[in-house]
Length: 369
Image 1 (cartoon, rainbow, N blue to C red):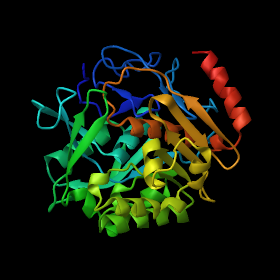
Image 2 (cartoon, one colour):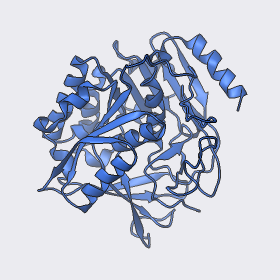
Image 3 (cartoon, rainbow, N blue to C red):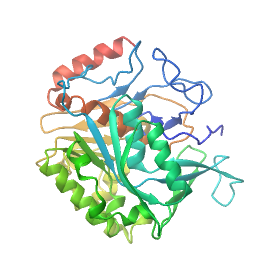
Image 4 (cartoon, helix red, strand yellow):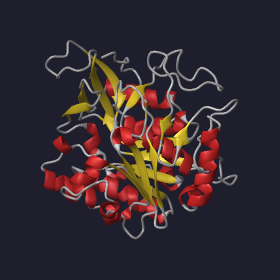
């Protein structure tokens, strides 16, 4: 398989956790009137459930069903991402097991950090809160956030623990598997007292996953960050990002993920995560998905791989088909999906309030492609 160099922080997906790696070179972000250049000089759009990312002339627009920025002047559009940031080691040759891979290349990773960079690259405002080791990798990650215009004021450095590492295998079908080194890693040791409280209060959206719930003291810091945000009127966004090998057991993972489920305003899940959380029920059955819709939830997004994605609110639901692309590297695809969605919602939270208007504007935009 022809695999893109794993030196990219952000990947663009086709709703499906299938993506093509963006290269950090002359093919990427060259001008304001070009589409993303993707691996081997191919172009692709990322079809998000209610949000499609595109380039327009003279300005980088987060196009959606709304089609415009509905944010009043002076209102915060900051997306603060809380959780882990680590180093991914990706094989230089795809389709091989970890043991068979001849060599690896390092790449920055961690789902919340990926989302923060995604939002920033789409022209939005983002920040990251989390902990890394006081080591070369930790400082490298902090520099990468800064270079990508992500506020890293909330980063902390631990002198007694290393930055987390993950080895990622890329199978022949473009999907990936993970093996983690973090027992304990610095991200697990973030203290509640180390939270950048003012940064959280300034946010429009606080986004997080479930990995930071696995162990103390980070779990307490995570819960405290959520409470601070909720009390300040910040929207809570949750992507469980299930990584079973990191949890003590499947039951612990299920209970941990669901323990904060009812607090979120926005939730993104994959079809596989629905199967896991419902203990085997059909993820394509709307009645099953609606079981996951709690009274305070505003938007539930379900990714379906190459088939596309679905969106649910209290009043309406819908589906957007995926766009076919050649899968090169799916690492970070779901994070790019979330970043695209949050970058638009941060500037206009009314996107999930009026389906008829949104659909009409969306199809007008599609006709111009």
